[in-house]
Image (cartoon, rainbow, N blue to C red; front, side):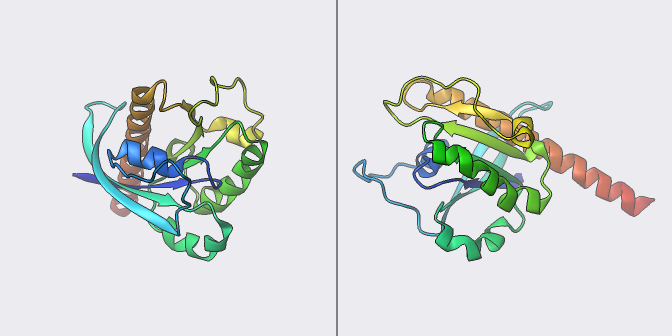
Length: 186
């Protein structure tokens, strides 16, 4: 079975843990109060990867990373062998929109990941209202796929979009492996 390592990164209080728990079908009783992730949590589960040919089941190693910059010295170790990166942010907070570029630079540009291995997720907290229109993102960020996440109103849309993203990651990994094999042969 194929295995992917996906990092969930982004500013504090953006909903990374809530989304990670939802996608991995993990339930935690935290009483609704905010408890920041310390370093990283690793969740392992199986998921369908949709979008390219036959839908495959893959093993997902999802790293729910703290958004606290006091853990910045650990980030290179977290990034090792990452198959993909999801930047999660709250679009209702202007500070989060400003931070996206920093997260992109530290986790995506520095690793040379392709756009298909990345995802922007605008996560709306319960009661925050409807989806926002066009987000004021830097030009290079507009190339990345963006999904709106609202677990209160359309939870299965989030799961479907994540499975489609996994399909893109697997397709990119497969193409990369084929290129490596061809370079060895020639």
